Amino acid sequence: MEQYRVLVVDDSAFMRKIITDLIERDPQFTVIGTAVNGIEAVTSVEQTKPDVITLDLEMPQMNGLDALQHILKKHKLPIIMLSGISEANTQDTIKALQYGAFDFIRKPTGVGANMQDIHGVGEMLREKLKIAVLTRRKPTQPKPLSSTVLLNNKAAANSSKTASNLPKNDNIIPNATTNLSSALTNKKDKIDLAKSHLSTPKSKQQAAAEQAKHASKVAQQPPAATSKQQEKAGSVTSIIAIGTSTGGPRALHEVISNLPRTLAAPVVIVQHMPPRFTKSLAQRLDSFSELEVCEAEHGMRLENGKAYVAPGGQHMQVTRQQSHYVIALSSEPPRNGHRPSVDVLFESLLDAKELERHIVLMTGMGSDGAQGMKKLAEQGAASTIAEAEESCVVYGMPRSAIELGAASKVLPLTQIAPELIKLLSTH
Image (cartoon, rainbow, N blue to C red):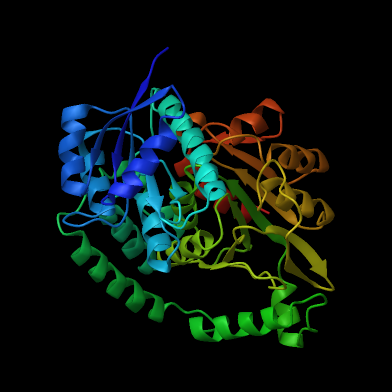
């Protein structure tokens, strides 16, 4: 039996021991080396030639984000990030996924971790390692997005060009910056300045205040809309629904950052991801997009030119209330092993036949979303788009939809946003 070689990188000796033990419970894997910081990790990759790496985020001398970019510049290796659940950790995890990390897991909670938690993390880690090493054998892999590429894309978005004129990531060679902290600081300044000049009807603070107000009423029956709100909400005649899993943050960046703020539809998104991480994902997408992107809350009214990310641990549905459409969240049991589930979101749109529905299924393991897409296709959805194998990190969910005959179009990642813009402009 072939064994896969794993390099474990973590500054904690206790955590290196736990991660090693969890990995080697599967005889398919052997830990061929460990490293205590990013510098050691970069050197160890050259010496040990692993098949896959687990990489901690917070380490001395060189952190996980810097190490990730250094490694990916020379080696096409799948890297699983190990993340804590602090706000800083979740934000850095989303960055890592956009820079090219294969996936991530939440770290066991440390010395006080109970055995159930440790075993659960171990099962998830071994599953993701298997997917990673098998995926690595694909003949082609999508290129990672470096911090430089992300900054360039945002600068293009802030110049108020339409999405069809934005630069595509596959035409830019990733180039990790030598001083990432400086680049990120400059990037944040430019983003904040550019966002302040966007001609949105409400400021971020006002929007957040209104969302908090709606959430506080918990919208078993959301409050009656004012005539102005009804007019704006009632203008929603089209909707884009996107489902994705492994590789999704990078794919979502490519699609969402290439949609214009004048988009004549709201965008609803399910990304398989645990609580807290989805909020960081939404914030990250918002910072690089002309669209306003937020983590969805119960009772939120859908508006054109805005994107809503389902919160981790909750299903998201779209429901109609009078002349407008609202988000409904629930803690119903997982579907297809997931909560949020793509199928739950897609199937909620079966009751919105009056909308022009554009359904997109992108990279991810398993088949979540395929059945929902098939039902919508049979009902006459305007378009059902599956990501092509050539650009998928994991060709699972799109393949399932294609095999069911649910996809009206199969497109590589960089063609999905232009296709959506074209479809919306011709209806």
